[in-house]
Image (cartoon, rainbow over all chains, first blue to last red; front, side):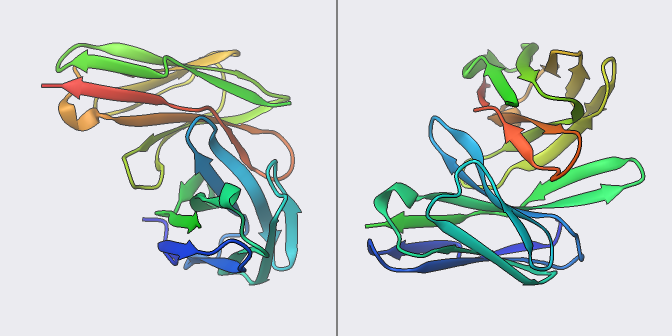
Length: 114
Length: 111
């Protein structure tokens, strides 16, 4: 358990509404990530953060924004949800050590846009 | 562009029947190659990180190996509880530490 909590775990929302997913970590790691997982595509990076207020885009960032106002929280916002954003969203953190680095994932947030 | 290809897409084994999963990759300077296990409805569970060609790591019935172009996940005498999707990912040197994933291999072990 890498101390990652995602909320909400399940959400159904209507097309055009804003949605925010939250990732919370308890161990003060610098790097945090948001991925989405879809059948036939695998896990794809949406956005990542390398510190408070430091974020960058991944390969599928269109339609998403992120914010990190404190180390422990990384928020993913869908400004106006579309059906193509129905997916499972995973938050991850990078935990470095003297022996290398490991990236741990949360349990996922299932989002359905109707 | 960094790329990861896993094969086969799906594999069915009988309990005790050993086999290997393949992960071929291209990356602009490898920092690490990661293996994960994912059960239905769950997040990926970290298994191994390999850093250089020739490196091997083991965990119970699993053994991961790495060459300059591919990695193998060997499963020895699998049990039904080893059934899962196994994901491979690469991390390039320099910068974000982000992972690029393959599409996974779904392993089913029948009793």
